[in-house]
Length: 140
Image (cartoon, rainbow, N blue to C red; front, side, top):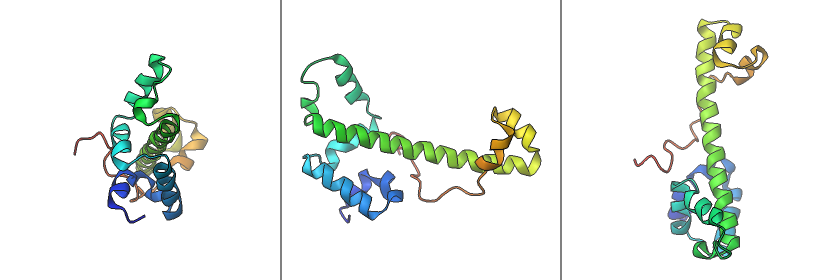
């Protein structure tokens, strides 16, 4: 897990633990996928894979290393998106926690369009520091 290139590309996996990251890297390497192969797909959110798959060509996956490689790459795009969804939920939770300092749960629930019972469950007092600071496509 000490390959800096893999760690840069799989930064969204750090929260999953060392074993998961090592197993993920091993699967990619067994399929012949390098960090350089994976990074562009994470950066475009899977746009090129989707376009190729949607085009309907029988050999659409060949340009990306074949069906096995595509399956792994698409799963990793999903893992990145899941990470970003969790990050957004963390931010939302911090915001709700702050709103509850000023407003009732009923008022916050109505303003956000969630059930009153859900408001306290969504509130989080801090943002987890293990989330990515920037999405891969932010350009910074």
